[in-house]
Image (cartoon, rainbow, N blue to C red):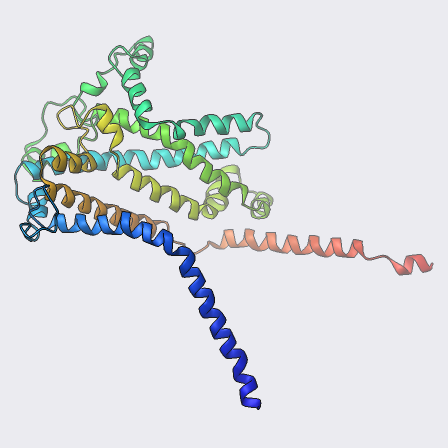
Length: 379
């Protein structure tokens, strides 16, 4: 009797757990089926296309489609033809785009969040909406507006002319902004190539046209990431910062030693989303320049599209997409390692300890005041 009574609750607990698990799988089954049909299956199909000679006609799994291994990847990475040169050019353009956009948009978003988080700021709701508005506007519409603003006779060049300078022909200037007007570089840089692109071109930076897209990206994404930083700032406690102020830390020290370390999870999210968005840039290029001038705004995402749909090289287009996926994973791992939790310094731990002690003393004082003084009443 005793054995049966002790085993019965365990069996009921196991059956209840199994019932909950079955209910959970039942509720999540629709979304899992949708993701499988519209995400996993297309990814697997694209993976097969990248290692096959599919011509784009019929099913990729038809009997006439053959496995060719890494041939499509070789055409893009080491074959030495036009495909390799185009991919190297696209990779160089996109790399400079990422290096300029991700840090700039992160700094701008954090600065905007710190500004609109001030309690003394009037009209905070208006500024938050105004800064976020470009993020919800159609990227195609903003790109068309950008083409007008940065045209030869556009508003940007008009402002530059008013300042006494001569504005560039933004979307028709293929030279790199770091070449400083040099016609050619040293033989050591011009004679060596990587992915069909000379080292001189790799070091030339983005073209003037790509620089306009860099400004566009910061303008359209700063508001979105501002909201992420704003939510994180509003969830921070002020105890540690008050302890740092009492220790004599100035505003700069409080930000870099107290506030910024607490924003590390949000910073990781913002940089990750920024990396993914920058490496996948497509619609601005498609609407604006289609890779021109002289392929200086060509990106891997747009090159994958043109290789598949324009050149009918479906295997190469799929291979570029998977190479781009690998690049995003590598950059995400690197920035995760950079933003990993570091050992807390002794000074910052002192601020945290002081804040905890101060909170304890305040709590004890409040508790003492709340207790009625019976001795005083007896007198």
